[in-house]
Length: 135
Image (cartoon, rainbow, N blue to C red; front, side, top):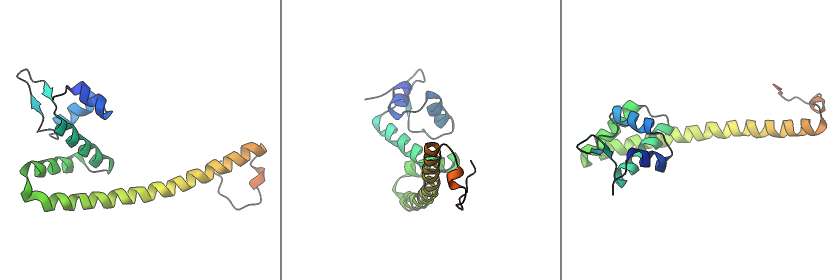
């Protein structure tokens, strides 16, 4: 079964523009085209795009994603390179999670802070406590 670009965009929750950008950047060399140049996406193409999206979320530059796509096309001779790359992405994602967890702690604290201040109608309830307000 093949899908049109609009169907793939809808399935993945991204824009047609994003898919065209990926194609323009050389990230979709595996996508076939009709004689009229219409992209024909297969299920395996959609799975590959999910990997591209995953790598982007970890902050991987397009240039490196393109290199990974090339390695994938090369096949088994690049298994170690791809494995190493995913170990690096794992470390990057772990660092992002740790940073987000620290951020969430601050956000939760500030939510509680403001909830209590709103209930009291003032921040004066914190006046004698050593808290960072930043209002």
